[in-house]
Length: 418
Ligand code: NAD
Image (cartoon, rainbow, N blue to C red; front, side):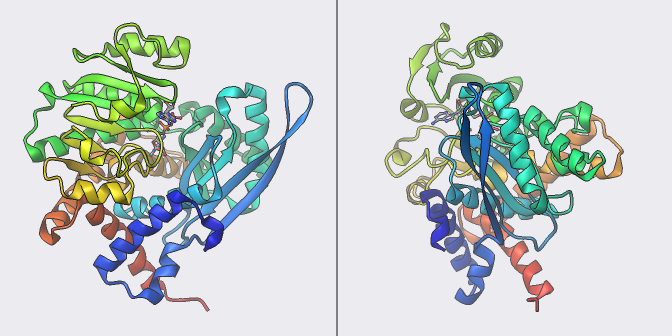
C-alpha cells in the first residue's frame, strides 16, 4: 500500500513479516492483518494570532476493529505523516493485544510545532481536528489519548468539543484527560512508571541490582521524566538525560529535583549547570546499566547498535530501534531488550482503566490503579520471557508474535463478512 510509504511504516511491516514468518502465517492472510482498516486525512484551517489563516494536515489511522474500539495517541510534531501514524497504529494493535485489552490500535497526528504556537492557536487547531473527526470517533469506535506534543489540556479540549456536538458530557471519548474531568488517577505517570517497573523485572532477570545501577534517558517529556523519577525512587542513579535541544550528563548522578525546576523554567534540560553538555548521539553511547530511549522512532540504528554500552535497553518510545539495529543487537548476548510494545504498555493499560471507570462512572484509588497495572505488566512480561526462552527468539519477536497471534485468532473466529 503505497499511500503509507514511509521509513517507519516500512519498519513496522518488516517487523510484522518477521513475526508472521515465525508464526508461519500464510501469505494470503497477511495483508488483512497488516494494513490499516481505515485512514482519514483532513485539512485544518486555523486562524493565527496575526489574523492570517494557516492550513495544517491532520491524520487518524485505525488499524483494526476486530476486538473492539480502536485506541491510540494523538501526536503534534512538525514531521508527522500518514505513514508514520499508520506504523504507530499497527504497533498499538500488537501492544493492546499483548496486554489483553479489548482494543484495536489507532494513532493520530497533526503536522505542527506546538512549542511555536500560542495557546489559542493550539486550542483552535485541536477543536477543528476534533470536529473533523466526529464521524469517525466515539467511546465505542475510537478513543484518543496524549502522545508526543499533546497533553491533558489537549484531551480536555477534545472531550469538550465532542461533548458539545453530541449534546451531553462524554468523558470516555478520550483518556489521559485531567482527573477533574473524569481522568484516572495515575494515568499521567502510567507509562513511565510501567517502564520503570519492567526495568525492575528485567534487572531481576539478569541479576542486576537497581540500587547500584546507572540510567540514561533520551527524551525528558512525560514518559522520560517519569521514568527517570521512578527509577531514581528505586535507587538508580540518573546520569544523563536529553531532549530535542540537547542533553546533560553528570556521572555522579543528576539532581532530578533541581533539573525539574530548571526544565519548568527554561522548558529544556539544555543549560543545566550541574552537568556537562552532551549530544543526543553521544548520550545513546554512554556507558550505563539502563538506557531508555523515550523520544522518537529510529534512534538506534545499524550505525550505533554495536556501540551501545548498556545492559538493559528499555524502549520507552515507540519504534526506537530499527530492524537493522535489531539484527546487530540479536548477536549481543550482553544486552536485555524490553521491546516497545511491552515496555511502554503501561500508558494504554491505564488508559483502558480510565475508559472503564468513565463508562461505569465509578472511580478507583491510585493504589488500585497501580496494583492492577503491575498485575497486567507482570503477566505480559512473564509470557514474553517464557516464549522468548522456549522458542529461542528475541524478546521483541516473542512480544510481537503474542500480539499478532491474538488478533489473528480473533479475525479467524469472526470470519470474513460478507
Ligand atoms: P512528550 O512530548 O511529553 O516528550 C517528548 C520528549 O522527547 C521531549 O522532551 C522532546 O524534547 C524530546 N524529543 C523530541 N525529539 C527529540 C529528538 N530528536 N531527540 C531527543 N529528544 C527529542 O512525549 P511523550 O508522551 O513523553 O512520548 C515520548 C515517546 O513515548 C513517544 O515515542 C511516544 O509515542 C511514546 N509513548 C508515550 C505514551 C504516553 O502515555 N505519553 C505512551 C506510550 C508510548
